[in-house]
Length: 466
Ligand code: ARG
Image 1 (tube, rainbow, N blue to C red):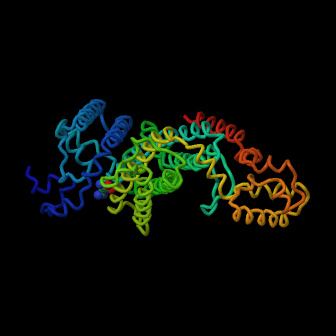
Image 2 (image 1 turned 45 degrees about the horizontal axis):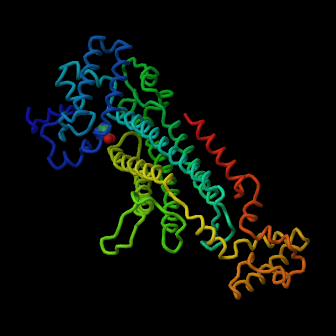
């Protein structure tokens, strides 16, 4: 049988000429969907077992199919399998090879099935496994953040709003803010995994099949919670891919925010932290450079993931029921999101525990910028001043500090008292950085004691994960 013969195609019966060579390449997906092979084989094994259970295949035919498919899996794994573009996609490549191996029985595997429900099943199975890997890596990153937060629970740094010094915070508190973002990402991935876990097998091309199939059985064999409800929806639905892409975009948005801060903090102007050399690169012309390439690249990679989300949404927009070839375009964006997210999570999970903090520098930075000004205002309110008046007094003290180049805590009591006679010696308890952070002693606050307690709670949540 030559490649020119239309009958080489499993669907070639009604055709009188071979597919145009360009069209063949243009419509084929095997170059990228071959990565579904493992799940495609598992889906076929479950389908075949179901067919045998309901009597459509004999047990002998089932064993032949099982052996053949396992041999094919081994061939693919060892790189011996020859993928053919003229066989279009992973599904037809594997099916054709099965028929090569076991003859006519191989052709029976596709009974009561279509590539439409087959591919929908494969992607769900594939994404389900990848989601499990992604949340494992996400948990590893969270573990690193919590450890770093605990280690740096007492380290003081400036907290910013508008990127201007606002109030002192602890470095650990800042790390736990990142952790909260990731905690929400985790729950979004879990939601996505729960919703995708339904089995489209049995929907066949679009309307179901005339064979006495047992959809509950194949769903159960594949670890799905249940079969999907509606055959038309089963073959056309790609919501799970879009949901995943949306959750991934948000995760990447968070990672880009961390990255931006890491890039700032490693600069000579901030010097808040050091990244280990093994995560940085140098410049070919400027010998002094140590560039934070990993955070920079992750900050950049959010672009492609957001782009893929829009691709998937646009792919599905206005599609009539049921399956359309358009859907073949779901795979490359989906695969690239998976690869990108896994790489970014790995890089950060490896790097975060190795971050070192220059505590002297972060403390000194918090001293600059009058970060305890709100504490002085709160102090005056406790002495009976209305907040607006207190704000005014502190504003004047700050103006004086700017002129004299002095932080509030560096002024003498006499100097401070020129702004308000309510100020007494105990003011220095609140003007120090430690006094300021320790005073924010409630759930969600930056006090080291609270940070340590929050880190413990975060760790307990992490340990509850399966
Ligand atoms: N390669 C196809 C895809 O990825 C498989 C389904 C093809 N179905 C069809 N009726 N042509 O969507």
